[in-house]
Image (cartoon, rainbow, N blue to C red; front, side):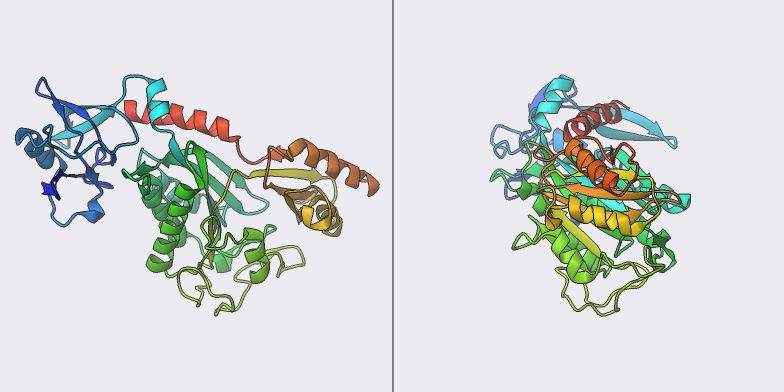
Length: 414
């Protein structure tokens, strides 16, 4: 098949396990012959107009030898790969699939450096069924890797950390990432298994899918992160009819997440003075969302989606049950209260015997966990309280990148 002189191969993304390679290649081996396939493109299933199987299209494409020296110029940012067509038996039917492999792990790491990290925060951690459903959705596409999951039962909140690549066109603009469909599948699973009206916890939240943030990794930029954030926001707003607020690089004016949350009353508990339970706001929003309706489903709530540089999340437990002390210390830790620059903090109840200073480090290379720890210890000592050693809720960008490369290599070796 061709479009504007470009050979196109339609793949079965989402149903064919080998339809996940939506990037361009340069060389392919077919029946012992090395062919130039620099114009070969893989198009996700939802963009197809005709239902043509991947093996049929692949076989037809190669046999017709559409990949000639006149094919379109190389556009891939992922480098040179070999395409090996091999036969597999599944359910007693022969299937031909395309398997992508690189010459070395080092080359793969270098070529796939346009990567995004996506963190999704769900309002649930006490029920296994919803979390299992969300994780199954996250694993549907092997090209998206779960590099971390953090469950906090006291807060009744779970965060998944995902990584995958971004494809750029020949102008350098982002056009595709496996993360988009993976995130939507996870969101759909969450809305199908979690009811915000039945949720309670000691961490603020406004939605079943409370926050989705995109961070650039390696050579990726905020432009790619913002592109995906806006694409996901449009999908969620239109498909699930959930109000979505954009922040950071995804917002037209770069509006901060903290500002939006304050406008919406995110930080005001509505139950027992220190908890958030059910839907906490009017059903008609007074602030117009960037995507989706102004009317809110009480079962789903609203969602924040943004793109920004790496943010560290560092929590410091204090041996006390007095949440007023936690709030007082948090104010003096945060930049807003005259404390540490680029630090935002909350004082929250964490379990039966602890309060916690939950901190967001907007520039972790400038102000890290050690400075936060020292500040909290000093302020807690003035209150006569003992402090436990704080902890990051996620790995560093370097560790996440290493883990992704190891896991994606294992996925492709299967």
